[in-house]
Length: 390
Image (tube, rainbow, N blue to C red; front, side):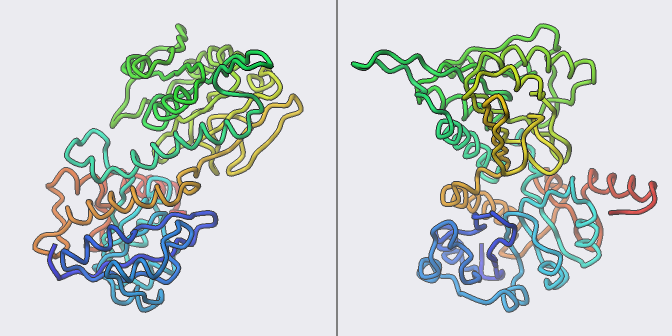
């Protein structure tokens, strides 16, 4: 990588965020390549990475103001506060899960400041040579795994079939909605725990993936199979969505545990489980909504990072930030993704933007004072036509 770059990482400021963008393992790799690494004291504390571990790996501990003044590249997990990015000098790299499709105004501010912003969450999952950089996949794997453990903890029966002197308990019925990375991991985890598992997705290729894990596939004949771009299904038309909700309600009513995983990049998650469907579930049933967030979730009754128990005794868990609940594993995977992308942006140890490169074209949001990502630029143009940005 060369010795021409200083990389920094701060403690994440978002409430409840326990991850960190660099771990001692990746600091050691950066230092071995000649990079200088600055770490804010306490940056890794929530993920059980001590300051002494960072120092031993070759990092220099520095307060936030000094770090922001010196770095060439700032790595983060969630989008940093405006005051943080305002302290960066023009021309600096900002790399993280920047969520610019939902926050285009932030991208406009970064462009005006002269920052080169790079969104790991914009990396298409279909680019095979970018797999080592795919943070969405690494974090979704963790979320799918943890979702089943969270559900099992709230479910007051066994997941596997158990035969004891006190009799036999039947296995729990688990339904996983969405067969992307998180959904498939949830299916695999529930199967390992001995549950009877059913999966569902509108994408035609998902049936074989679900069945390859030993799960059943939920058929809803009234809903067409649809594919989208970059591994995501397209949004259903209103009539299709209503038919899907009716079909899913039957499967939900038969389940003891439901895990929902359907997200739309930069958009509102599709509503899969209505309040009426939840009312049909048996007392003691559990739903875990991985899409729950400020703009809604897959379950009508879910609330972000909250647990709701209905009058009918159904537990609804809004769990949109589960990777942070496994901060050590999530940080380790994310740090590897982020440093792999950083390495791809360097030429002879110096950050070099080349929008002819398909990976850079997908993830570089702002550069040289402009918003260069077409989707973000289109959002800003649309807002300007409506009377200004927000």
